[in-house]
Amino acid sequence: MKPLLCSLLCLFSLCHALAAEVVTVGAEDDWAPYSSVVDRQARGFAVDVVREAYALVGITAKFDVLPYARCMAATKAGTLVACFDAVPNAMIAKDYLWPEHPLFTTHMNVYALADSSASGMVAAKLEGRTVGVERGYEYGDEFDLNTKIIRKVVDKNDQGFKMLLARRIEFMAAEERIANALFARYPTEFGGKFKLVGTVATPGLYIAFSKSAPDSARLLRKFNEGYAMLRNSPRYRAIEAKWF
Image 1: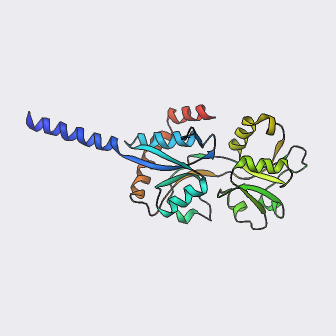
Image 2 (image 1 turned 120 degrees about the horizontal axis):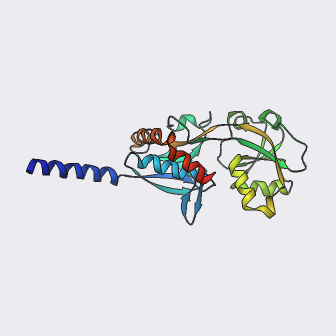
């Protein structure tokens, strides 16, 4: 019985060690419904996906919620293991490690005032025009690498839409569900005031892993493993239904 007891104790200790592993991941604070801060906690679709992907491989994910630009800078510097939600465009792809699959795909749209006559606004048509963008965000290579677009950088999307209302900019670039969530959250201020006039990209958004943080390569592999189980499961669709 003693060898069996020792084996069981070793197995229990191994399972406990696996279950006790914790990873702290950076989560952006202003991208509801994907990731935002609510009562000082990370909340959103991407938050749930990352948490549950890691849980499937015995890792508890905790979140450091902070502005996206700071989140990505800390990940690049190696003080955070990873950060989401990022587009691996030509400007940043080489600075991070990337999972096999995106957390989700989306539309990066262009918005104008409701009385605007603009339509079909792709990156080339925005050259020489003033466009609001959120600090540190990626909007696809055609937009991000086009130096002829006049960018007005804001810290939060709602600030950009307020600038658009005040006619201080001609357009606002924003992710589709983010914009819709803002319009619903502020119906008096934003409801019916804007219209969609173009799309500059339909990218996949990822969790970006550090190249220099300790153990980041292994944690990326574990994320890939857990996410492979989650992304084609009914649970992934349940998370989508919860947030969208």
